[in-house]
Image (cartoon, rainbow, N blue to C red):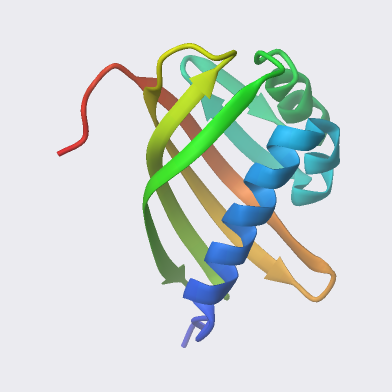
Length: 127
């Protein structure tokens, strides 16, 4: 039987907070959260591996503020954690726009990494 992480919710919340803190203060430090097998989809761009992901994230405007409006976390087999974040993103003091991010996290003794990561900016309003 596959192992489910009993602390999935606590770990997921901590990682999301850590991720957004690094995103806002030093995106290059996010490299520690990815591996060469990690994948990211942002709008129509597909990135694989730490260097491609960080390169793509660094193309985003430097001043970005995230406001999380909802956070859903579920355990997945092999101690994985699936995270869905919906909220507002403010880019360079413009009006907030909606975003959706999903992360598939695999905790490791030395921390953890994201195997898959989706990021979408949407003009839709959340219900």
